[in-house]
Image 1 (tube, rainbow, N blue to C red):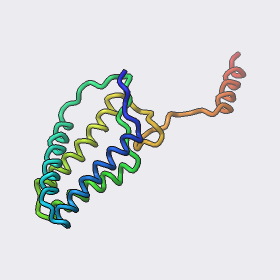
Image 2 (spheres, rainbow, N blue to C red; image 1 turned 30 degrees about the vertical axis):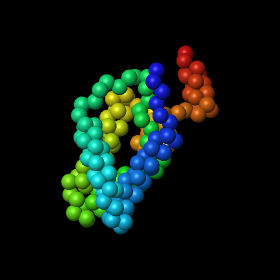
Image 3 (spheres, rainbow, N blue to C red; image 1 turned 30 degrees about the horizontal axis):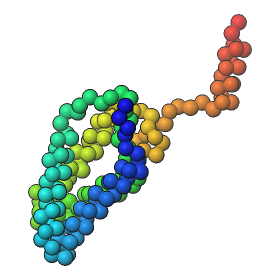
Image 4 (cartoon, rainbow, N blue to C red; image 1 turned 135 degrees about the horizontal axis):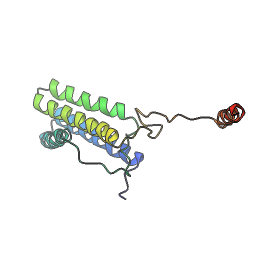
Length: 153
């Protein structure tokens, strides 16, 4: 069984990823470092192509594996990704903005599809979209059992 990454590691990766993208954009436009712009452009094109690939039909997910965990603050990460695309569009880089949005949307679609394919209805309680399993309290379960016993002839 392959071990999945922890939520803390997913958080570290996602926040580092968006921080590097924002730092490269800042160095490119505010610091006028052209090398940062080249690296950012290549980075966004690669992630955009991978994002497009994530829209393709998924491979079969193993039943014993859990879906990829969402990072802590994943909504803020998605917001920063969209804000980065808006900033790129503002500076006149529409194709890069489109690739950034495709990368963000592809990751989100992949995670949703993975959870759906695995039938992950009950997820970790902190994950977004998690449905809690119906629980009966012990006292309620005892009361139901007592009613069943009393109602039988």
